[in-house]
Image (cartoon, rainbow, N blue to C red):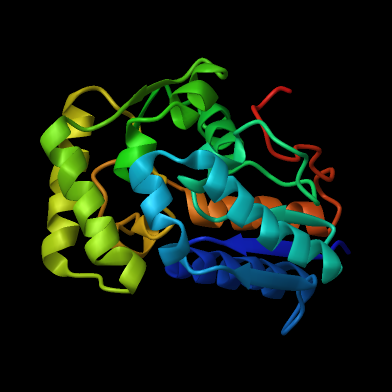
Length: 242
């Protein structure tokens, strides 16, 4: 089995990915069994000023330190259970120390396999306004939609004021459900939960649309690599396709 390295950028999403990865092992390999996994976390606070300034190169440099440390710990490949971080990881630069799975490729691939035609995208303001998911979905013939500007602001505020800090309230869940209902009215046939904390707030039974849970989809893909069901990734940062 291959050794997984998890590059944490926000703690709640990384913890969910770690737990989901191990649970895949319990279900398929037997009680208490899972592939080796190491998690490295540099506090999100170190990167928040750069996010606000649009300085993706410095964020990539910070994330690359985590990848280097995971390589030294013996990891064979990495995942980063933070969708927004992939905006930085996609920046041109030196190859990362390990190959990694790209979370948007995993999510968009599942949407295409499920036959989705139009997917709503919920994430941070940086991600909803950015190119990562429109590109990944369009490459597979899937359209994508984001909420209107006011609702994007609400989603982002809840993420940074509550979700990344482990706060999950009924009021915030109701707001997200309302926004998903509007995406459904606009013709979306699924919603991508592409802040890795959102699945902790919006569960499938609460969502008006089928959900694409980026955190658990990434964990499953990582497990498949680790046990040999899926080939080792080749992406080492930079633009997808390069």
